[in-house]
Length: 305
Image (cartoon, rainbow, N blue to C red):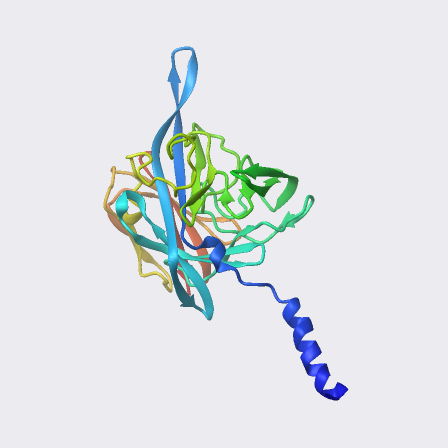
């Protein structure tokens, strides 16, 4: 073979070796159990009471969105399998696209190093908007062997949770890593893949049965489930302006906050009706809605075209 014929082949190999490998199998056949705790006073001490769990499951089903292949993430709380969004993995980075969104967002970057600044917004489902406290700076990284597998823990300078390589966030999948400053705590209590437990939290412990982790996460952990996410609707979504907010479980008053993709609060409103038309007067883009209804705090995604 002449050298002129070899050159294209060599260039193909070179660029192929430098393309990030898609590894969606890293999030296939997985289960995550998120737990929400509230601090309650007891005689002589304070106690964390488990209030509810949010459980996510993935199989091998994929979906094609915008030319990219995602693994379907399902909300499997209380045995109800409802589509939550799509996950895809490129190298050390996980991406997420919510069920009511057309925009992909970063979920995790497990390739960060100490001193790196994460300037781009990343998806979180509860409590705080994207980068609400400014760009995150990696302050500490350690590696811990968890159930036989070494995993990097990435800590940020203004957070209490850690990103755990190949698992998610120690405070829950899709939940944020920021410090808790109120009377609650959030935690990832179990992560399993391919019928084997890969991570357990402090409260989950040996719930799988005497520390037997050759089984997947037990979805019966905590009978109290948070189903309010399925009871809140916004439509139309995407929208060109306003939208209808409808709540099946309404306590008589709710607080609505809307954040843009940079974490800036762009709309604040008190909601006093079970169903109401919202006209926030915001521009085109991707937004996060935080709705506090009684003791429940939920978030939804909104796209304005």
